[in-house]
Length: 244
Image (cartoon, rainbow, N blue to C red):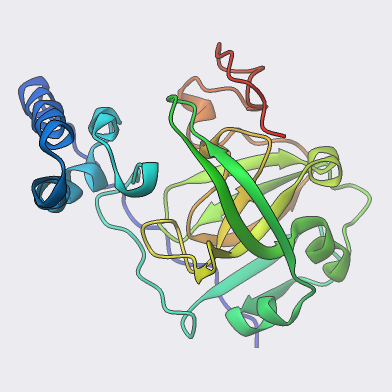
């Protein structure tokens, strides 16, 4: 039975005032200075602010393990592996909807790579596991008219894009595990996109749909001024050393 695409949710982001954001950054600096239990308590207080802050400034506050938790919507998907589904359609020969178990049954790939955000933070040596995207596409059959892919999120707002050439050339994964655990909700789980050589905003969270299309459609951040081809060290005016 063919499943319907997820219903799109309204974008519920709302701005935070300059005073609130500066207070958040100040509190975070105190936690860094004192460390220990106080930092843990501060992280608990700041978590809701990080989750809905559309400015990204709350991401200046240190997070666990170097990660910064960020979303473009006020509420985030909370899907179990039993509830999860991934639609693959558009210009393909065999449109299909995959469950978590379906993805787990496909040939698995494992990479240990750095994760680099365009805002400057990096997490080194992250262990990822999942299905290389080009292997998944081979299973559904890509039509000759397809040139690009649009990725959709279960949050109903976020989209991203890649060309087929990038998928064939680069390390792109439908990721199910991070550091040996199922990808958590905060990290965009239970299934997210991972685009190793590009900045983190290309690695879409809560992956819901892979749509094969005939032209690149700029994603959520691209229409707001970020580069479509977001290679680390050679885009967005940054000079980071590329991930290898």
